[in-house]
Length: 211
Image: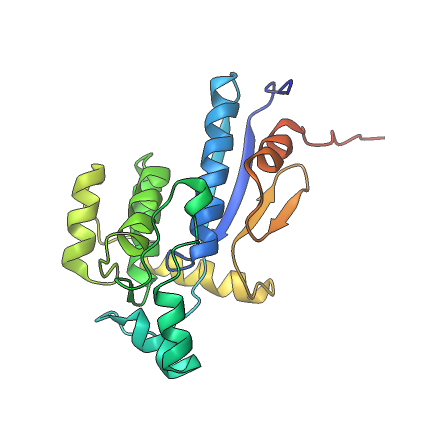
């Protein structure tokens, strides 16, 4: 594919860090962005927070127990043993180990990392911590360790900004993630193939004409 890399691109990525579909979309989109940048393109990813379970406690709870309460034990066990999610993308998603938790502080950490130029790396590490490592990404100590691994300097800033963004996402009527909004007007709900994301990156914004 011939890539149009003349103008910097901006993509808003609305996600939740305990959403497996957000994780798959993030991985595929990140690979598309890497190809676009390798071809000389400039792309800025702006992460927008969304909470699937805003009332979940930060203390965490086994995801199996959450699914058991919602769907019954048999269905919860089937989900826990399902290894198909992310497999075609080379990911290991371990629902059996996952700790369901509140993601507010994880979103705040992404915002802090983004201000330091490390938003993409921090987002990847948080997804992997939840989906693969069985870590509670609502726990302050765990978040501090993950931030140190990525090289993010600790900060207490950003809570009000995250609250404001979560409120804005609700006002926009967003009810599910992932959602990717490209500066050329293209929008994708749900995870898409890498090639689809790359094509969207290569499609420039329509110039604004003034009379």
